[in-house]
Structure formats: C-alpha cells, structure tokens
Length: 337
Image 1 (cartoon, rainbow, N blue to C red):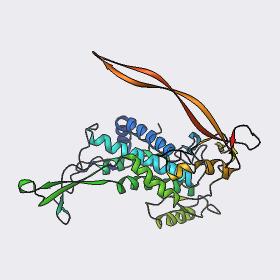
Image 2 (image 1 turned 135 degrees about the vertical axis):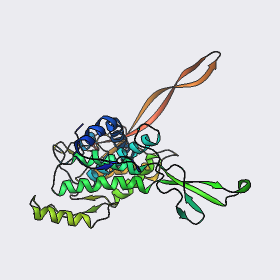
Image 3 (image 1 turned 180 degrees about the vertical axis):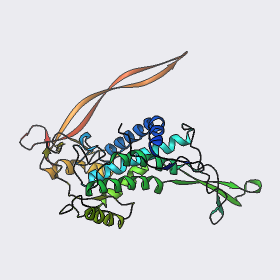
C-alpha cells in the first residue's frame, strides 16, 4: 500500500487534530485493512453496475492514480475513481459505527439542534466526517501528479465522497405521551452501498467533459488554469477529459477485450429493460450475432433436516439456456437479432 502524503486531519468529531508523519503511521497501522476492503467493495460495485455494458470494469482499468500504466481520462476512469473513493469512505464510516476504531464514535455534533418542522437532531449518526477525512488521506494521497489528469482524478475522488454523503438516510424516533409523536429525534445512517453505486452510475451518464488536454503543461500558469477550471464545476459531478474508445472492439494497448465472447441476457421475468437489451447492445450493435448455448447445471435441492443435526440434499440437474456474442461468420446454432 502506498503511504499517503502528510496532511492534517481531525480524527473524530470532538477530539483533536494530528499532523504529518505521525498521522501517516497511525493511519497506516489502524485503517489500512478497512481502506483495502473499501477499495475492493468499490471494484465489486463497479463490476455490478457495468455487468451488461460494453465496458464492464476490467481489472486493468482499476488503478487509482495517473502515474504508471493508466493514462486514460475518460468517463469510465472517472467512475472508477469515484466508486473506489466512495467505497473506502463508506467502509471506514461503517467500521467506525461498529466500534472497530478506538478514536471514532457517533457524530452527535448537532444533537439538540432543530433539524426541521417537528424534529430535532439526536441519536447516533454515522460519522461520515471521520470516514471522509481518513479516506481522503489515503485515496487522494495516491495521486502525485499535478497535471489535468491528476486534477480530474482528485475531483472524481471527491465526487465519490460526496455521493456517500448525498445518499445518507434520515432515521427518526417518535417521542410523546402514550406513543404519540409530538416530537421526533432524527439521525443520519449509511444506505446500502448499492444505492451509492446507483447514484454514481447516474452521474456517470451525465459526466461533464472538460477540454484541457491541448496545450496544458505543468507550469505554474497551467496549474492555475487547471485549478480554476475544476473549481467552477460542482464537486458532486463526474468529469472527464477524453472521449471513450470503442468498447465493441478488442484493443490490447488499452487492455480492452471487446464484446466478442461476452454473455448477454434475453429472457427473464426479473430482468430490467437494460438487461433485456444487453444482447442488442453487446452483440447486434457491435456487428456480432447471438449464439444460443444450452448447458446443464447441478445444484442442491429437496433439502431435509435430519435429527440431529444434519441437512441432507439431493443433487438436481437443470437445463439452462445462455446467450453469447459471436462473429456472424459462425452460423451454427445462431439466433440473429
């Protein structure tokens, strides 16, 4: 794990600030496992959100800085940074609430204040301020560049953290005589992380393109122009600098496999419209045909509990139909769109 750059950060809502190398050592020892778990949850959510898209979050795209191999600056890169940053912040906040860290507890900084008509802040809010500060220390610390791509990455990291805050849920408890609800005390809780994924997927579709690649270098004037440009864009929005490549086609340089050989979905009562159109999107629109394949699946069934204390199941075989994108020259067993 790359150690982050020194920053000053408040370690909990009502405690103290720690700065410099001491913070790096403390953060690395205490929080690194949560950071790793959070980054992994971001990767898993990315794969879920794009499972039936032409770009499906391949492993090669999941580097979180502009140094090294990843130099793309398209909207997919923007999503990777946002969802990874959100995953780290979410996991740190959740682990704080579970009591995993000695220096973190509830955010009760607003308790007793009027929140709205008929309710007050109270209870035990999830401490997103703590998760935000520590995740920023780790995730933003990976970005060592000072060019437009680095600024883009940092902006999208922040958008991911804003997404966690924006999807927080207000939970309330009624107070009053005989169960009446004369007043309510309310607190904020984390949503399911899936909701953060859906939120950022919407931001992905509306991502803003910033035209900064031409003629922007690393001079002080250029860095000033970059900073001014990004400061004018809402921190909640995803931004990108480049157009996306054609994900239908294999591109070994970019680590893209294309859509040939990809599975798609056609039928199923529980499928969304987006999933039902995946064969057209992945195959037909990419100049490929759909091949129908039948396979047998074996699973446990007719399970019974036997006293005491075992569960015994039968092995049931079920025939399933799956669909895959193939070249149109391959004729046998094809179902054309």
